[in-house]
Image 1 (spheres, rainbow over the protein chains, first blue to last red):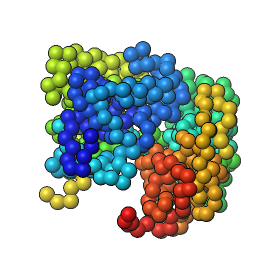
Image 2: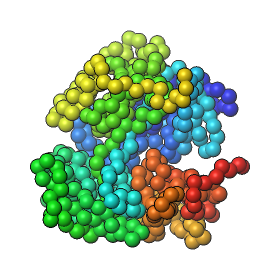
Image 3: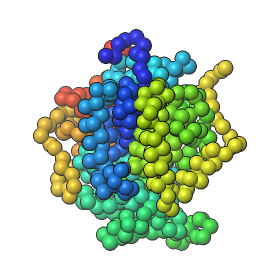
Image 4: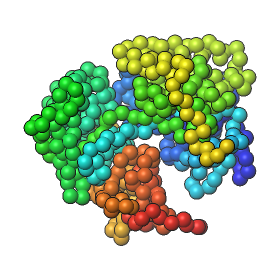
Length: 377
Length: 103
C-alpha cells in the first residue's frame, strides 16, 4: 500500500498514543481513511505502562487500568479496515508543500495528507542540580518503562523528586516492583497530586517531604546518593538542613512539556503558556491549529491526563473527518459530546490550571511563535 | 535484575535472545529494549559525553532524548531505549558523535 513516491492520504495521524488512537477511531467511524505513524514498535503510547486504574466517568473507561485501555484500543484500531498503521515509523519532517516525511526501518516514506492530526504527546522535564547528568538520574516515565514494560527492576532504592500524580503513582508502582523508596520530595508546601495517591504511599510507609528539594546527586560513575534540604517560605534552601539520602536512582517527576516540533515545522502559531506546560499551538473549537487542515490532540495541546487526551483525540478525529465531508449529519453532535466530556473532566480542582491556561491561549496578545524552523523566507 | 513476582503484571520470558555489548554476551527477552536488557545485566553507564567525557545513562526511555545513543551493528546514534535486540546483534558504546554510514 505504501509506495516509493508520494503517498496520498485523507487523514494522517502522527503518534499512536491515547490521543492519536482515539482520533483514528473517531475519523474512521465517520468513514474517513486514516494512516497512523507510530515511532515505537507498538501502539498505545504511554498507556502500555499505566498499571493504575483511571479516574473520570465510564465513557473514559474509568476504573480500568491504563494498560488494559491501551490493549483494547490497539485491537480495535488494528481490526479497522479504514485505518493503516505504520509502526517503527518516526515522522521526521513536515515540508512546505504539505508532504510529511517518515522514516520506517531505514526507508524514507513520503505522505501527502489532506488533513493531519498531530498527537505527539509530551516529553519529561529536566531539573538543574549538580550531578544531574550521572547515570541513575532518570525521568519517572523511564523508570515506569523499565519496570512495567520490560519487567526490569530499575533500582534498589529511589529518591523521588516531585509529588504530582506521576511522582506519587510511580513511587507506588516502584514499591509494587519490590523497590525501596527513600522519600518523595516536593518543593511546594503541599502535595501536588491527588490525595488518594498520596495517602496510598504514606500508608506504605514512604515519607512525603513537602518544602524539600534535591541539592545534588553524587557518585563516582553513577548515582550513589543524593543530598536534600528544606526550603523556607520563599522557596530558598535553609542552610544546615541538608540530609544525605542513600539511593541508586533519582527519579525526576517534575512535569512534562508538549512536543510541538512538528507543529512548528507546519508553521502553526505557538504560544508559551505556563499553565499548559510549555509552547502550545493556538487552536479553534475543533482543535484545528492556525495552519489549515492541521489538528492537534492530547498532551501537545497542554499537558493533562490520558483521559482528556482520548477525548481530545475523538474531537479532532470527528472534526478532521467532517472537514472532508464524512458524517456531516452525525459529526456536530459527536463533537459537542466530546467537548462536554472535556468540560466535565476539567471541572475538578486540577482542571482549574488547564482552564486558566486555555483562557490565556485564547486571549489576544502574548508572544506568538511561528516559523521556528525556517532558516530564511 | 528482573522482576519475578508482580501483583498486576506478568512478564513473558519464553524466548531468549543473545547479543553482545562491547564484546560481552548479554541475554535479553521479548519486551526488553537493548537499554532494558543492559540494565537487567547491571550495566547502566551507556556512554560518555562528547565534550566532558562524563558518564551518561538513560533518561527518557521512550525515544525522545539522546542520552542512550549507541552504535548498533555499525550504525551510530541509535536510541537503544526503543531498539530491540536481535540474535547476534553487535552493540557498542559510541565514542564521539558518530559518522554517516552507507549500506
